[in-house]
Image (cartoon, rainbow, N blue to C red):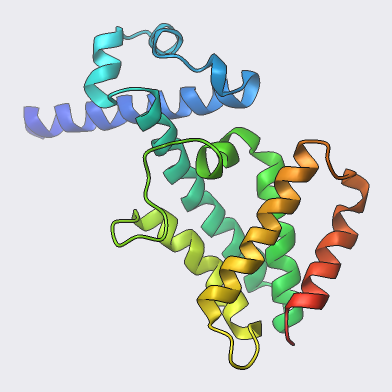
Length: 192
């Protein structure tokens, strides 16, 4: 292995460490606790080293969001692949989405609440975000109903799931009714 390859591997390893540490800190203490100073202390590198990887917190949030989107896509596909029939797939998708949001609140915030500098629904949208949307579209497109654009239906269904996740987490909706809300959403929106 050449010195250049070793340096590239070390750089990639440091980036993964920075992102993992930011994510861990955000999940434990919230995104306000994630500062470049605190990250530098935790990973035992200087702030200039951290800035050689990311220009600031916004880019770190973006990196966490991309990682989260990739994980969400895998979780959605795993949940829906085991389901039999369109309604079961939509129900599994909704459950997996809400479970992901509940289990990973800081990552979910990085993906959808915070400014990570990422473009959504644009030609330069990063691939992990496109893939997470595709994981939704793959299932929801088959239940969009006649005359409805599958991507548009997916956006509406996704917005409803996001609303449920966000409002429940904020204490605006009682969590014990999440399952019934999800069932109602599937029953009323998905044409099966």
